[in-house]
Length: 337
Image (cartoon, rainbow, N blue to C red; front, side, top):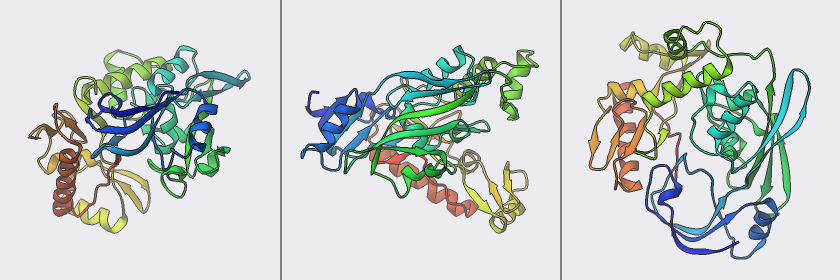
């Protein structure tokens, strides 16, 4: 373990924001993590994973712990399924590709989502009709205050739409160190109902897709819509799709009958935030080095030297305009630091 002072975090966050960590340390195993947490220097630590779901608006004054725990192992398997554990520092997309290579089904729709495995249950990541919770078994975590190892099962994680216990009552109290998934080995349940996936498969004349076919379709779709953070700073979708009640939904639909929506229940409706932002006129706009991507209005981008505060100011402007026009509040999906 090596403590670094005034470490630039520009290469450790996908927005490419050049903020400093006043103190920075990288950990590669759980015992190191416990040792650091027990040290008096470690008061209210900032835990850094893949840096893909955050916007830094200031320097980090507390100790930054960069979680570089690596490893994938099979815990058990039978003819139908396999239970796989991945350490928190594994790159999410690389883990998905590992599963597809071994014909383990369940995560293919979540291909190319940026970030690491450790943050996946915190956010309950999801895409194209699939969420992490669908394959989730449990996760291990270290309690910051006591350094005790704790295991959370699916029910205890209290998963919701882009939400979990780790964003609510357990926020800032635990560091996820590994995640366990149950994946299929045969008779894969394939989720291809989304039109974009259907279109992509149809273009390739694929009628009975493999999980690899689905993954490749998702990758192609995401690449066509979302910029590569290595080329253009971003954190993927900046806002959540708002979920509204019946009254709000009917008032909205009466004004905008052609607007897309998804019925979650008879009293709950999801409206695409990207559509709202695009209709508000923001798609492709640029304000200095902060902007909205030309192909996907949900994605805020850093064209080079934008500060985190400039991007956040733009996000607030978008929120206010969408609320003014549609009477709907769009909530950030990204953690603003």
